[in-house]
Amino acid sequence: MWLAQTHDIFTEYRAGTYILDDRSVVDRGTCKEADCAAVVVATVISMPTPNCAVIDAGSKALTSDLIGLSGYGYVIEHPEAQIVALSEEHGTLRISPESELQIGYRIQIIPDHVCVVSNLFDSTWLKEESGTYVSLSIDARGCVW
Image 1 (tube, helix red, strand yellow):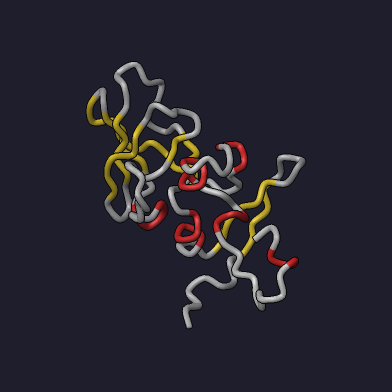
Image 2 (image 1 turned 45 degrees about the horizontal axis):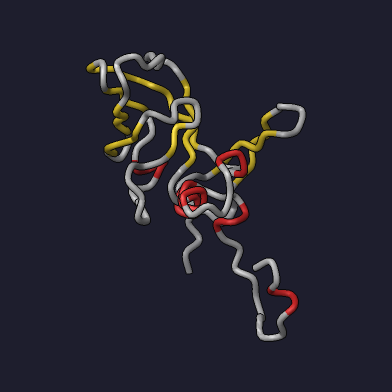
């Protein structure tokens, strides 16, 4: 894509994952975690056992598309946590008993496949350099031709 303008055979650009980056391209070594511009923010809503936390983000927020990876995203603040299962509305994390996670904690998750995730929401929040968040409508949401 970086050299497409130098070749006369290309007639269009199809913007994709590299605009936001995701866990799949981190896994391939194409970028680093800090390069990922999109995260899903989830809240820990239950801790049924010392090794398990439940979050309020499931397949409708993270997508069940594994694209060859194990787990359903990367928890930035707790890289040892593994998202091992999803229902539509909830995710299950395998954690160590020593984890600092608690009910009410908000975590940031780098999704496995950001293209799918960006199509699951009607709006998003953009973080400006000042740290202020601005809401942005996802106009193409649901526009499948």
